[in-house]
Amino acid sequence: MLQVLLSVAFASQAPQAEIRTTVPLVLAPVTVTGRDGKPVNNLNAEDFQVRENGVVVRHELEVTTQPIAVAICIQTNQHAGPALAKIPKIGSLFLPLIAGEGGKAAVITYSDTITVRRSLTSNAQLFAAAFQNLTPDGYGSRMLDAVAAGLDVLERAGAGYRRVLIVIGESKDRSSKASLESALAAVAKSNVTIYPVSFSVYLTAFTSKGDERFGKAPEKEKEDKRPKVVPQGGGMNLMTMLSELGRAGKQNTAEALAKATGGETLSFVRLKGLESMVQAVGEDLHRQYLLSFTPRPGAAGYRSMEVRVPSRGDVSIRTRPGFVMGE
Image (cartoon, rainbow, N blue to C red; front, side, top):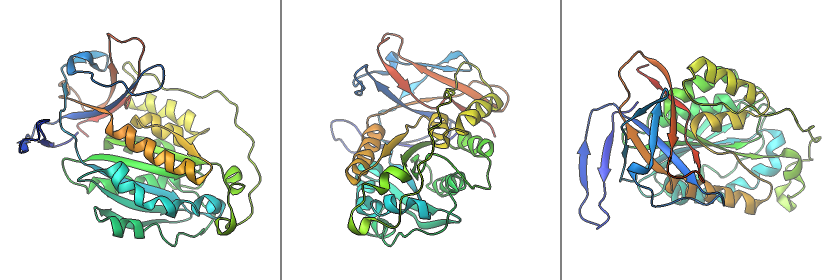
């Protein structure tokens, strides 16, 4: 739920008109792709259908591009060393490719401890400096605690910003104080989209050269071949969502976070792959449709949300599965 400040820039490049409203809105970033995996462009408001707890609600398609506030959480433990050596080389890409014009970004690292290395800033030099001198420290992997810290940082972005969290690390949480259920509950209330960018500590070590090697490759983990649980929409309550995503998260924490927020899981092995992942997240964010609607009257709590394009059966739609009303 947001107190929304909308700035509408007309396509004709006319002076910007600022619209202020105190109406509580739900904002739903939506990614639409075709069978070829490419974005589907030029859809209009009437092409979409939005359902809240299974009931169709009236919606709008925002014509403005909201600035983006992004927090980057980076795993910095000893196992992350080979991957960690690559990350400073892409620090300058996040502001222009992801936050974009008018955006701002923050940097958080996690291992045994959680450290906010740079609070939200639009200063490219200050932001890039936070990526320097990243060295392995500790053996923990407090991904969920880092997500909680990221949500807190993004909460301070102020009105009018889309909020995005990027987690660069292994796909599993290993030592957080927060439980997966509590983290997912916080995420459900936050209106934040999470993009986990995962690496294999085993494979990444063998693509490192020279000073990119911080240490030896750890033993390769056995692949978890259990079936993945995909949460379904259509009226599920918060506890059902937490239960379903929690089961999935025991296998892959990163995937559970992405599914809970409408984000996407990505991965990399080499530096070039990491650069491509940053570009992919930026393209995904800046090609999304931003739908808004006023929730139906009713009791506070979790409500499921589903977005469809009824006239197009050949598309895939990604958005968050629900939102929290009045809490």
